[in-house]
Image (cartoon, rainbow, N blue to C red):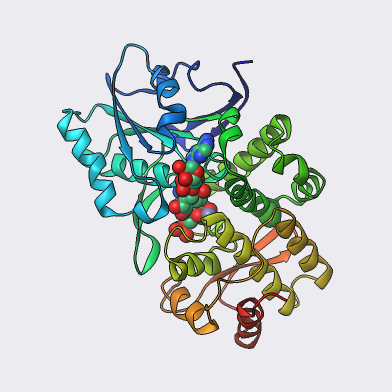
Length: 365
Ligand SMILES: NC(=O)c1ccc[n+]([C@@H]2O[C@H](COP(=O)([O-])OP(=O)(O)OC[C@H]3O[C@@H](n4cnc5c(N)ncnc54)[C@H](O)[C@@H]3O)[C@@H](O)[C@H]2O)c1
Ligand SMILES: O=C(O)C(=O)C[C@@H](O)[C@H](O)[C@H](O)COP(=O)(O)O
Ligand SMILES: [Zn+2]
């Protein structure tokens, strides 16, 4: 079966774009209707290239297709690696009418998107995400960028793709640890905005971990629908969009502390969401039963339930002080007021925050 089985739209006026979902689309879909100009630069990495580069090339018949293969890893989401994309574009004489194609996970997507935002002051790009996390989250919404040693995604731009092509079959080659990492962002949508989805996830987690195609397609569709809706309401995160950051204030601190790549983004977000649920319960905003329900689901997705060894509450506080959501030095967190309802708040309840940090910095028993 090589057909588009589900379709969504990200509604952003004249910058609206489709998300096409199906099985076996890589290599069979014709993406030329979304290509601007006659040149295409596929950006991928040295893990994904041997798996899917040839199939991806076949999606652009009649175009000049060039490729740049980056080293794989979160630690390469930096200036030096970004420059490899600019080098390739200039060496192959790509003009302003070129289209970059991000073929890979969120690291490739964020970097290719940022390169597209910058090259000759902005060119078109297409997202072809191949990890669960990138299919449910990073390929949609136009956040692009790179890390800085002092903070996650600190340099970047909003730049929306022309379209997103999701081939669920590509997930069959994904390591189990990466599947769990992707599930963290899937669970996030249930926790912030979709209580029915949360209930569905509780009964579907085993099939998702087993990479059952139908269940995956449903989870991806519902996740993208949730993200597309939030992005359409608040593209540049002036308010509502920050709920997509549930667990990320803690999670980004964990990733930065551990050194990018040691702990996967989704893993850090999983722990961070447990911490957010824990703090919400300490604040009295959700019940202890709801906190336990959230934690059970995240643990069920095989995500870590503690901060990395050696990380202290003080490490959290100093790393969270540079979070992008902070205003005038005040920490802003995304917390839960119910399962399926999130708020952005400056009220972290100082004592409660310290209790949560301590609880998650303790070694697991
Ligand atoms: N822009 C956004 O809105 C947004 C949202 C969420 C996360 N992110 C970013 O995304 C990144 C995380 O993305 P990720 O989890 O996809 O990690 P990743 O891009 O590092 O990919 C994970 C691993 O899987 C490999 N891989 C990719 N596709 C594969 C396949 N089909 N089969 C086998 N291996 C494959 C990759 O080479 C890599 O080793 C982080 O940098 C995070 O900050 C961005
Ligand atoms: O799209 C968003 O908005 C998100 O917050 C999605 C997050 O899952 C993602 O990790 C994003 O990159 C975080 O953005 P940041 O602005 O906190 O760096
Ligand atoms: Zn994230």
